[in-house]
Length: 345
Image (cartoon, rainbow, N blue to C red; front, side, top):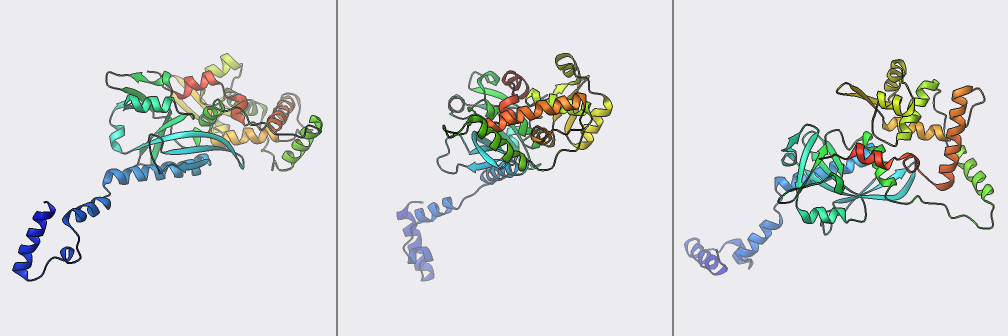
């Protein structure tokens, strides 16, 4: 209805009732009323989108214990920035995040996940972004989020755009800490300390090592050599899972069922079946054990293999602390990360 027609309608109402509507009495036009209605409109799609962002915010802080910063202004394809933490320190290593929420994004199921389809402009923007970009699908109803790293090698072009598979095994929970750390590690150079040029490097190293050792906290509970070697070998892979056969053939490590069950019970590893294979991977608690193990002082009572492992890990810890590195900086295998955490089409 035009403003003129609405005024005529109001006039007829006034003639019949003796009084004009309230919005006429205070001088508000019908078009203004319509504009105000649009301003307060908030449909289910918008609500689902907000719930998705809130869940990703929660998962990043609760499970990863990293930093989540939403970008609410001028959204052109990146909803938020995630910053990695190492201990109590923000690292300055960032990832962009695009969040898609709701059942409509889970409509095209494949055996290992869901297909996401997009337009070329978005793909070009994400691949050209200065930071690595994660695409996160949020199942709002079940409160689960799945992620994939947007890389050209994992994308298939279509006649009208492109597609990528979001693996159902890549949940945004504690299991994502290792692989996301590996993604961060290969996108930024390690931060090195600024030292006094007049001070001898050995003095800086000794002071730094002593300070860090004093705050290292209680030592990990002692584990048998086989279990320690299993955890440290999985750490050296740099994230992701490895089969028992791969560990044996590639690294010469045989993990006995007794040790595997013990580490699972402690919450240090996850074990899952993939066809005839058993796949092992470090949990978030397992990564924490490895980080603490590197910084723990060597015990004089250790013998043979355990003593050699402690000497090695202590040396690695000195190097990491001197250069302010994380586990992912040292152990991330870039080629393996691409194979494990992306999805080939």
